[in-house]
Image (cartoon, rainbow, N blue to C red; front, side):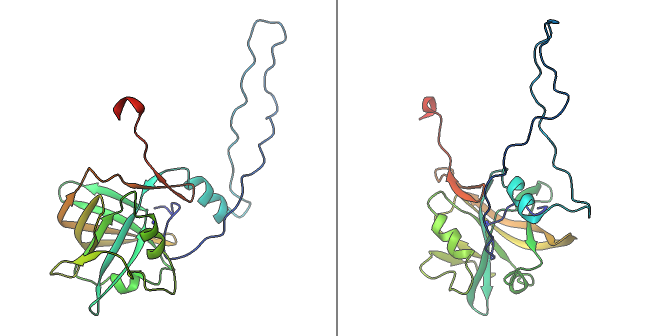
Length: 214
């Protein structure tokens, strides 16, 4: 669980540490007694390499600063549940009701889901971090031990989520190394008593209410 936001998906990524702090840019004004206060240094922009492309690790690091929810995309394939975790998910339109999810061209799961008549989208709850990790793992039964159910049309939904959508593929748009998949919503529901799972900086996190709202 984009334009390739950091994604909890069916591939693992190498981690990386923070970069050393940038040096103060030249030309920063200092107070020389003229009454003008010193100016704080401006943040430096990171520019593309000479080839015009950013390093993938740098993109993931910066994209990961944007916190997202995490979803499970799943359906029955030959009578068995198949699915993956994705955080590149967003609402698109109210009329008609559309959602979108971005899927990497390297995904080995999406080809099995792409032609399904219905797809289930479950917004995972705060206690489902292990479920998400399992759905993103390779070489394992991703649904072993998970609580799920299927709709009559074959969409697979996980229990205990904070929201769910029964969808069909409306349109697929190729975008760089991902496909933007537009999904039309046929049924939906939510349980706002279930706190959402949050993915930020390559880690699962939970929302914490302000003290005066507890």
